[in-house]
Image 1 (spheres, helix red, strand yellow):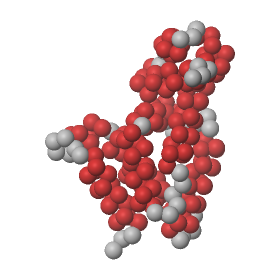
Image 2 (spheres, one colour):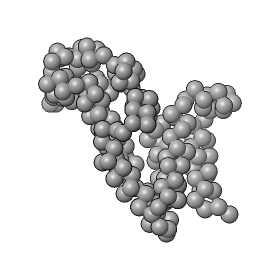
Image 3 (cartoon, helix red, strand yellow):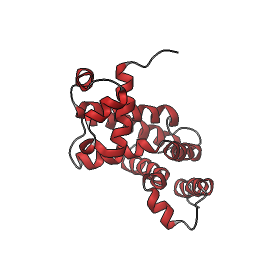
Image 4 (cartoon, helix red, strand yellow):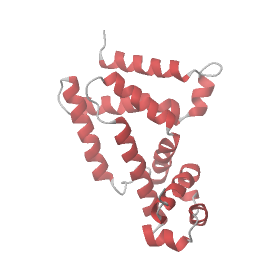
Length: 186
């Protein structure tokens, strides 16, 4: 078994710290301690806390892309995969929510790259739907993501809106059914 590199240890520790406290509340001392290194290694590897946050978010989004893929073929299966990923990886949504709070309406450090990534997804979705890529396909992509991710993004709302202990299998089935009705209105 190979030991994790200092960079990998810092990324893992930072992911937990940023997911729990956001970029403003995260402390480099806690990240370094959790990674088992001194904080100078954090700055040596990433330059700043902000650059470390960028690297953590980038890594999390790459994992999302690898797990979920493109919206091709069966779009309902795609929505189910989105739901499953966010249910099983709540840190990714937390990172995205903290990012939203931190940057607000300001430009993200990698916004152009990310916009290109989503433009590819919108184009793939449009092809799958047999329509033109444009605002309608982009809004559909945004709504599919929101529909699948929202129950995990706000677990307190999910708990309080749904009666008793919510069966996530049923929630997933209903999310997929809503996507079906949205994509194929009768």
